[in-house]
Length: 151
Image (cartoon, rainbow, N blue to C red; front, side):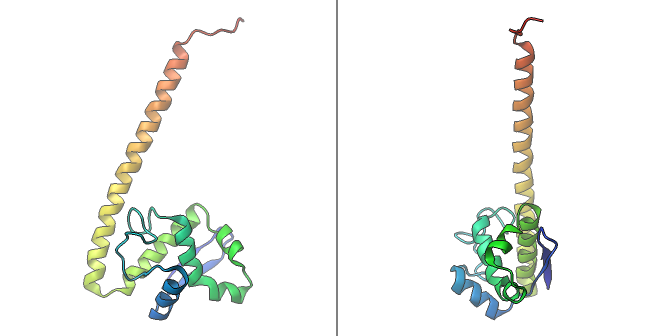
């Protein structure tokens, strides 16, 4: 079982069963066991970069019974999952999915996840470097432009 913590400090358990997988599919149309990633909650790898709204749909389908027990409406649940909390929930869900599969599948999926993470990290680094270079170029240009104000 995996857990994630929302932005209010509430801890949400994730323990997949076939019944919950069926519930998610009925509520969202997403087959968690398909793991094709195409047209699922995942658009660029295992729940690391994903369609946040579809991820929230899945998380709600998994947590709705517990949320109802605690009197937490869907809107409050979703509002409590921003930024790092949503990323944490995505990682916990993927880890729970991995544990749900038999060992040979888990091993292959973990290797796939590592390749996707490495590729994602490389893309993020390239984007950050490009952004920093553009900022430095703008600063250099601003420094070279003669000031029009008189002192």
